[in-house]
Length: 316
Image (cartoon, rainbow, N blue to C red):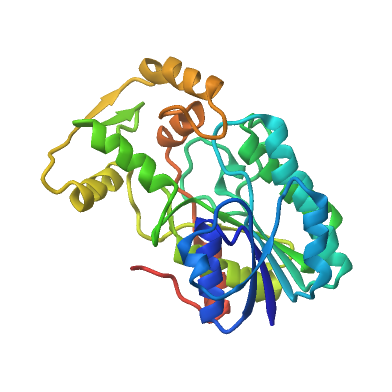
């Protein structure tokens, strides 16, 4: 069976390419400006894709695919709304409709757990949760709109949505480097707000993201549904920083302190207001909202899907 994986040159996409090649699939991956060494060494076929260019999207379908796993996106907590709309909404619609036209068995969309919003959670399942349409950050905003559009315009058996939490592991180029940059320059681990670092930091190992994509692609029960990807191991924000410090700065001693949210709100606003798609500095307003809430979701649906697909959770 042939799979088209968009965003194959990036972090999650290149891990997905290697995962599906190991699983015996024939994989074609799309690349844009950057191509990771992991994808370049994989041996998978590559095609150029610019999410802002309809011609490159349509050109992908000169070949036949059994499944599409759509990972490519503009991923940032800052940036202009119109850039996110084209890359993270208009392109999703175009790819999904072309997949339907060319008889692709299922369109698997990589969304985000941020569709539920940023507030305190306490082990809710997908059935308990709804989309937070009040979000104004363009990244989750257009993930929500894309999921809603897929539900309204595609037959249920033709799509599935995978919603990872904070993705890490195996060459992480996203959250870990940002955290390490902060630890490298600070003698303190700084928490903000009432949780004081005791809130859950919802980690999703990239291998579990790949395995869940696999289950979402094949399972009948996954059709028309979304699933949260979250490691079973409960990790607090304080645990996360301590593990990073032990691994990367074993000789450096950090003191943990907690400050009120108001003390950092204005610098976070400055960072968000004047950043492009790369934050000027941390935290941005969106990352501040993330680290000050207890993001404690249930992963029962993920575990059920993995079990049904004959897969297991990766635990390191």
